[in-house]
Each structure stands twice: as C-alpha cells, then as structure tokens.
Image (cartoon, rainbow over the protein chains, first blue to last red):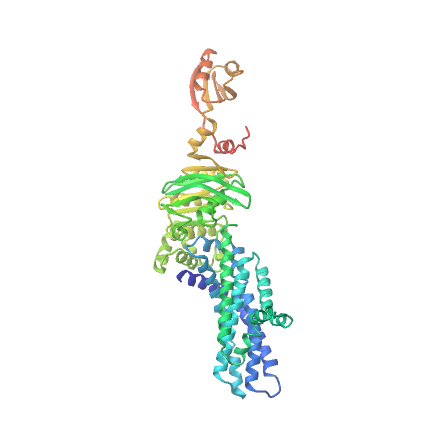
Length: 241
Length: 310
C-alpha cells in the first residue's frame, strides 16, 4: 500500500509541478462549461432535471476525454525520460506501480469532477433538482472515469509512445461506447453481450437519470479491474524484452 | 557478497550473454569491460533487477535475485548511463522520494540527505530544481539517488560518460570513496578510468567472460608471461644475432641504446625467459637486467577480446 501511494503521489505532483495538469483541467472545465451554458441551460424553458441530465451527458464525454489525455503520460513520460528505471529497481511489485499510476489519474478525474459542481449548483438559481439525482450522476461519472482511466493506464503501459497509448485508449473507449450500435444489428447470443458491454448507453444512462444501478456498478468495477490486470500483464513483459 | 552462476540471457534467439560466472567480495570495486554488444549492459541490468535472465542465478548476500527480487532490490543502487531524474523536482525532494521508494521511512530518508549530499558534493544544489542543473551535477544527483538508501551494491553504467576532465577526477574520487560502505560495479569504455578506479576487472566478449582478475593478473594471463624487457651490454647487431631466427622469440623492439647498453622489448611465444637468457649468454651479451614487461590495459583488453592489433 505504501509503495502504491508513493507512486500515486509522485504522479499527482508531476501533474501539478508542470503546466500539464492545469492546462488539461482548465481546458476540460472550459469545454464542459461552454457546452453546459450553450446546450444544457439553453435559452428556452425546460425542467431542471432535464438540464441536470444534459449536464451529466456532457460531463461524461468530457470525463472520458480527460481520462484518455491524463493517462497517456503515466508510463510514456517515465519511459521517454528514462525514469522508469527508478520504479523498476525499487522494491515495488508491478501491481503497486500500475495501481499507483491509476490512482493518480483517477484522482485527477475526481478533482476535475469536483470542480464542475458549480454547474449543477447553478440550476438552483432558477429551479430545483434532487441532491440524490446529483449524487447518483456523479457516482456514474466517477465510475465511467475509473473505467476510462484504467483503459488509458493499460494503453500507456503497453505502448512506447504517449500518443500511441492515447490513441489506443481512445479507440478502445469508442469501441466500448459503440457496442450498443453493433448490438442492434447482431443476433443472439452476441446481441445481449454487446448490449451489456455498452459503456454509456446501457450503464451510464441510469446514473444520468438519478438511479444508482448495482448491475452497472459491477460492470464498471469489472471492466476497470480487467484493464488494470491487463496493464500489470503489459508491464510484466518488460523484464523479458 | 555477489555470486553469479551460469547467467544466460537471450533476446529472442539472439544470445546476449552466456554462462557467466563470477563472484565479487564486499567493498570491492569491480570494472566491467567489453566492446559494444559484449553484454555489459545486459549483465548490469540483470544484476540491477531490470531484466530477468533466461538461465542462471544471482545471489546478493545469499539472497536469490529471482526468488526474492523485492528484498534484494532494497540493497541495490543503480545509475544507468543517463541519470534517471524527475527534473521538475528539487534535488532534496527527489532524493527523499527515491529513499521512500527504496524502503526507507521519511525520517530515515530525510536524515540520509545531508551525508549523501556531502559524499556526492551536491549540498549547495539540494534545494534547486533538477532541470536547472548542469550535466555534471545531474550525474552526481544520479549517484546520490543510487546510494541514498545505503545499498550494499552500487551499479554504475558508464558513470563518467559526458563529463569534463575536472568532473571525471571528482567522479573517480567519489566512486573510490563508495568502497567504504558498499561494493561497486562499474562499466566503462574508458580503460584508463577503469584501471585507476577498480580493484578488479571482468572482461566480456560476445556475451562470455574472457577474463577476470586484477590488471596484473590479466596481463599475465593475456600474454602468458610472453613479453620481457632486457638490458644488455652490446650493440643492436649483437641483439639481432641473439634473437633473430630463434623459435621462442616472436619479435623484438629496440627501446634504447646508450653507453653501450641496449634495452629491448622481446615478445615470446610462451614463458621462455630461461631460453632467452641462454641465447644472450651464448651470443656474448653482458646481461644487466631481465624484467617482465608491464602491459597497457588496452593491450590486455585487445588481446583478451581477440581484437588485438600488434
């Protein structure tokens, strides 16, 4: 646990010791804010809960994008700077290294989401929404962020270049997002499987509407675990290459 | 202290090192020599725990690197050719972080900094951001990170690469001083540097160990006591009469001739010193001195690696 936290703390410091972390957070908040103002709030009268749903819809895209961008440097930066050797020669397990880096990326996502709280708060100016709805939406965003952070951690672990890692993570995320479309044109037994795999359509929408869905929590936790396990496998191979 | 047995590493079907066996005693400074591609870096990386061997075993103070890697890594410090540094951190924060990573408590890591900084002469830059340091200071910080956790084995890969002459002298002193607390394994292409710093040498060629020992031992082995320096009363012609055409003499070179005394360097096909003396006596030369010639490290290296140019 200590080694894991050391890795996580150092990676978090790396985000904030350079402009990188601030730039990504600021850019994502700007996009989220602009879309919230232009599309979610809009200029016509609408139910507060609809505005909140739209906010979570926008924030899900921003969260996934931020996760891909923030994780691309986790291993790529260490490799290009030659500092991976510090972790490789330290008495740390590969699991500690991967979990530490995942935790750093996930903490950044949590910080990003924490900074968006003012947007649901603005709804209270002219309307009213349930705090439980807000909470469930944020739980969904955190779970979605965890999944894409795990995918990004894996992408960064198995590739040498940062951009290649980000591209792989982006493609895999998009595949998971679009499986609902494939499900529509598939037949059983593939159809229910593809439908179940849909990262957003099947699993995020309940959170967006204010429901905490246990099945989706299990799904998000499982996918996160699977990609972290793949990331561990990915970096284990480096001692044989 | 370090025991290496049957160490073999393949990259796919390409052999990098094969069946290496050597041991290194505590507080010894050992130099790793070899041409590019000889397997030095692969061996160092295996010893540092960065790579796994295809076969063989490495033991540090009796502990197996393969079966107890985490425990063994606590006692190893490694400096690759390019120092691994988090350049956005200050030197102090970086060294504390590395100490924590290597198993020290925060108190231990913080209290280790002054002495480590003093040993590596970085006290004045401890609170400076690493990105602002010169190459020489970065190398020193690289050494500092390798010793901050008080390892029993320090592995330095090309520690003087890219340093200026003053920095080389400082680095040499630093490496020699490390002997007081740990065993040091140094790889370098600069033979004179290894010669001045190391107690013992390991010479690799094509992934195999072709020689190990002190410089004198290697010299003896490399030429099989086959070079002597002879001083005798006589002329160059007298010496030619004594040495030319003799089967045990493979060549000779006149080094000096003054006051009727000629000094020559004689290459022999083996330890034929007695036969040479006999020939000289038979040729009527007044023998003043016969000594074993000291070989240059370059010559030993070239001879052992089969790259010799005579």
